[in-house]
Length: 239
View 1 (cartoon, rainbow, N blue to C red):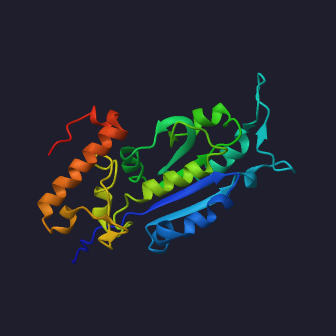
View 2: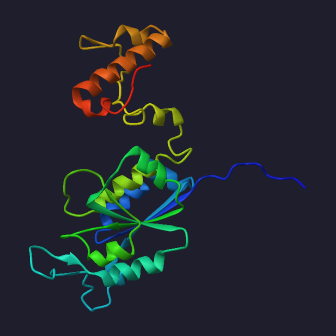
């Protein structure tokens, strides 16, 4: 009997729960994400949480118990949405300013999942019972607050998708980017070699690949030392 040894193509599905699906509809069908969907590497869908609200006004928020400014997203529509979309292999991610930071390592972990439901918060956040009962991971894209979590969810989907083999086309581009080696990126140049008197560094025109690699690493160290010295404190970055 012949056994097909062709490795399975990695595929991941994203279901985004948001009050503003129109914010990402074009994003999901454009550029690399659009190509990834056409190539069958990802599926990304945005769902309007109001579809799971049961009152005639499709209400998804209420004033918080105990008082305070703003509104809080109600648990009923969120529970209904997750319970309808969830499968045995599903992981549910909540985009929250107080979540764990989005890093390359976290993206590597999430890309191993087959199905992610991503909840986009709004107003003053979601009812704590949602976080306690439904959420597997809470993720923040930075130490700042957005008007809602839809853009943050789009950033997460883009970041995770890039780790799918074949998604970028040229896998070398992934390994040379900032934060993939814990150092910031090196300067990039292209033609013309001389533009308005600004010349490309001669080493890049030399064809000496060892010298080019050495120059790039030195540039990475210098930039990282100047802009993100905290990164250098956490490991050995010398070749």
